[in-house]
Image (cartoon, rainbow, N blue to C red; front, side):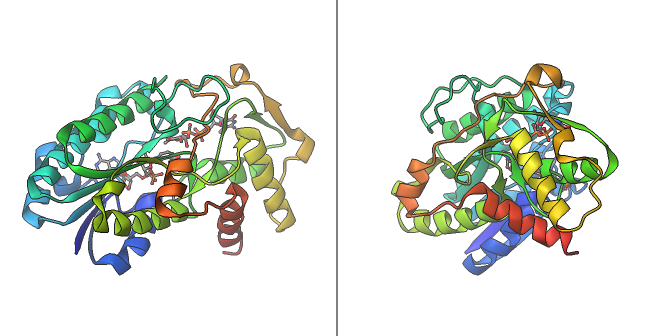
Length: 297
Ligand SMILES: NC(=O)C1=CN([C@@H]2O[C@H](COP(=O)(O)OP(=O)(O)OC[C@H]3O[C@@H](n4cnc5c(N)ncnc54)[C@H](OP(=O)(O)O)[C@@H]3O)[C@@H](O)[C@H]2O)C=CC1
Ligand SMILES: Cc1cn([C@H]2C[C@H](O)[C@@H](COP(=O)(O)OP(=O)(O)O[C@H]3O[C@@H](C)C(=O)[C@@H](O)[C@H]3O)O2)c(=O)[nH]c1=O
């Protein structure tokens, strides 16, 4: 089996290089400095796909700068919606499979109930709108696909909220962190392992194709997540400047950002767990593993 992976240097792409390796030959394309893999050049990307004729495309490339997307909606749309749609058309033409990733930010965050795969979408920012359009383009192409919606992704390699908090905690005496947006931090390693497991299953039985919510178990808010990370760092001997009681919990209104974010980012994972017989670990387990890796360097 030949697998073409886009976005190899991102948090998820890096982990996918490991988790997909036992399934077949992985051709991993990364930097968007290469025209053949630049998602702002859809026709070049389509030509790459036709030339390589893979059995599976795994797309971990995305425009993930949520605040910046507010001022660059056209770039976010090209990378997150237009080119995934072009990939899907190419995949349909080849009779191949497409694996793609989406986000909790396709929902508007109302209520407290975890969102199901068939819950109504209603993104509140440009990034979310571009990701939803990407999903819709893939479904409209009729190609065989898996779409995983996930949330709050972190990895030892790459940029993420946990690493931002580790840095700020060493630089500042006080932090303000939002405590009214809820979700589950999800490790790129867990998501990569879920991908290879599900891909193996769907290639044996096409009935598994479709959209799934894939996040770690449990829930927290950004403040709870920050406190957890900083407490672990302190215990590991990192020179943390901020005292525990100086990590101030604030409502969203006290931490204005260019992009609005949903208050309820909880995703219901029953469909994924039932389909593939998976157990999803609590979010703290993966975060603690990442911190061990980061702090022991
Ligand atoms: N990060 C998160 O919190 C969440 C992510 N997701 C989704 O999960 C998936 C993986 O995200 P994650 O690994 O965290 O993202 P990262 O931001 O870590 O990686 C994104 C990758 O996309 C590549 N990329 C960006 N612009 C382009 C472009 N114009 N052409 C080609 N490649 C490009 C980057 O390449 P380069 O290295 O060259 O810049 C990078 O390797 C995405 O679909 C994302 O929307 C969903 C929920 C949460
Ligand atoms: C840095 C900082 C952020 N925050 C808040 C702002 C925001 O509501 C929340 C998270 O901020 P970030 O900008 O790190 O995370 P953000 O870019 O919103 O993360 C999102 O990325 C995209 C790609 C996704 O798909 C989402 O699932 C989600 O992971 O924390 C604070 O409250 N205090 C702080 O000091």
